[in-house]
Length: 344
Ligand SMILES: [Zn+2]
Ligand SMILES: [Zn+2]
Image 1 (tube, protein in one colour):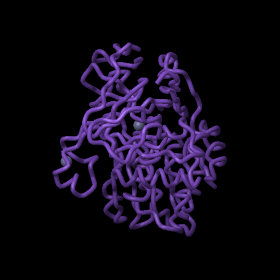
Image 2 (image 1 turned 90 degrees about the horizontal axis):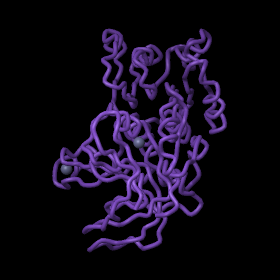
Image 3 (image 1 turned 135 degrees about the vertical axis):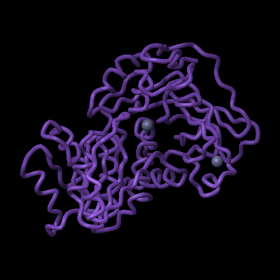
Image 4 (image 1 turned 180 degrees about the vertical axis):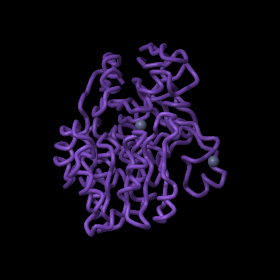
């Protein structure tokens, strides 16, 4: 089978190889991948700025069809259209696993980062992690279930957004716009904040039902955010940009007692933060990373009911063979590239 493999550490060593097809082990299903989305993690691995142990098949956002069942698998049928969670293995016994927080398991391995991923015609994944795609959800949309689950975790599980919350999302990238959409479904008043050069993303946000967008580098925009609806500031800020100054920017917009949810990585930078402001205003700083199985179930539910529409976020669909071009495009901001895979 064709698979995109990181064969060496550092910035080089990405190759489309012909590998023997994986054989599903106990508890695994074999998925013929039809669509696999590129995310920042894949770009960082490709460029060597995120270390992995080669050789590794990349890709963790995927959708496809179940074409094989390993020993002991029940409850999953051949031919089912699915997407998958990203856990490849967890211990199942530690306090995190027992609490349903498998993504925190110290023994976890993950599809596309420490276990074989989905930029391939076939991938073997745990049967417990696959979810049937709703009939009206195509494979390209289905491949975005994972980033949608990341947004669900941030908005519902970590921020606990409630109806009427005034929410600002900094960073109009894929995750930012998914976070904003999920917050809208909860009845929050949502503003997406970016820069003046993000006009195209603001148009997309409005298409997705996000009512307000503002450019933080324009004076009026900044003030509108900082005031909230009553001049006291906003309830929740999501930092989805990874910009070094965004965290300190975010806390300025919060009302006293507000919460800032850190979703984006800054690529190893230590960023400035006015801690006195945090203490004075009794702000809560909360990190959100990845997703738990329950977040995935909620994401599928949102897709099923058509509450969130991730498809317009996809800017490019390319065949697997054009992966080099895909990575080049995915390195630019405001893009979401999906590799379409036919042979699998
Ligand atoms: Zn991802
Ligand atoms: Zn565990």
